[in-house]
Image 1 (cartoon, rainbow, N blue to C red):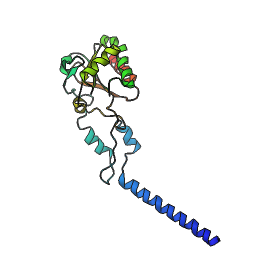
Image 2: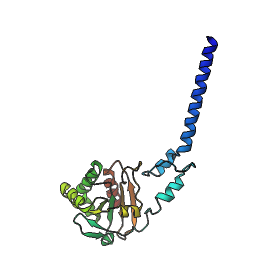
Image 3: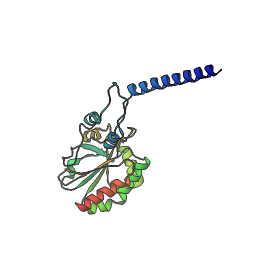
Image 4: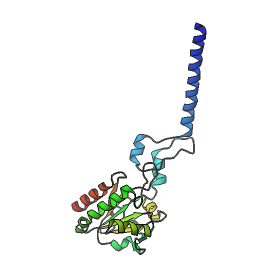
Length: 217
């Protein structure tokens, strides 16, 4: 009986070791996941399984996803989009004054509603600083009109259907790629980007940070 028990123990350990070994091989060869540090450096990236069996590096993410990223100190790319009333609006129209351009995921979502209302509640402070506020999402003009009317938003909302402008500016998505990202830009009177702020999960912080910058400028 003792020898049978020993055989059973040895056999079970061998089988378990073999099973775990196969799982380890499958895990390592099928997927390559960025390190924790690369996730924090490139917050908001869409993570996907590697199609090849070679490891993915932060550099490959950066070069492929941020090919058109707008950076601080650069002139913001011009665009023309329809506002909540269906009228075309160009960014160059605002040359000569500071502009706050904030990209948000979608109308009527909890975080975006909170952010929109926070911009509304501080709108007079932005005007006092001489700045205009523009919100941009992929919703159409009709959605923007209903959203602005419901919450009495006093500033311009632009419709970026197809997310063309979002892509041109290189606005990152959220960490898991489930939603378009939430990013705010402050442009000076010459249209040069002076501040970029990204915070997906604390919408009101966008207002605090941009006002703080405008008051200090």
